[in-house]
Image (cartoon, rainbow over all chains, first blue to last red; front, top):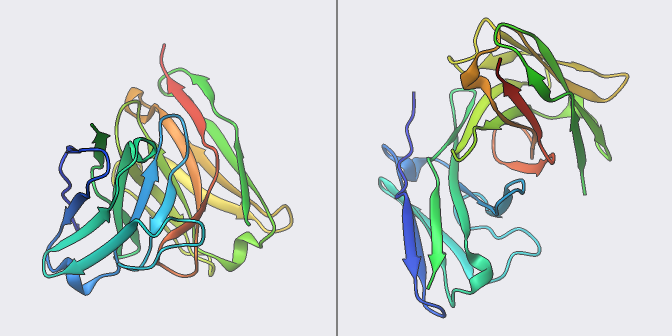
Length: 106
Length: 118
């Protein structure tokens, strides 16, 4: 099975850039997707196919993917960005999720 | 925008059975890959099961042999039959629509809570 590893938590100062990583074996060869989940709500897609922002997602959200690491970057972090973030790939007829990262905006 | 509405969750004793439903609107369930994803209290997202548009089904090892995914095309509804439930199956269960055929989830239901406890 394919494993994705995320840091449990990331903290960022208000207005600065947060970077959340997602590590997997040769993940650069896969499409990586990112979801934001606020407490009590369903996940929301914020980045798909490594770098694409769905309609309605602020330009402050961006993604990259190379080698063994994919990264979700959130620039000019706002209090409203505090949430859990999950990376996801498709592997052998399964959806594989990372363990999730809690983003705290200080 | 696609809409998914889950139902069928509740409190069930260990060893019991429950069937979750996911009613879809604004798209045809049988044209897409559809999944069930669960989230235990305070934990991350865990993929549970998948049904291809062609009907093939797949399961996480943790539920294989106990859960069955299916759909009713006439009702445009996805199901998850859960048997031999265990305490560790306690979670919010989401139905999820793939954008196409093995890519990302572009629509989630609101989730339904399943609590397995005596």
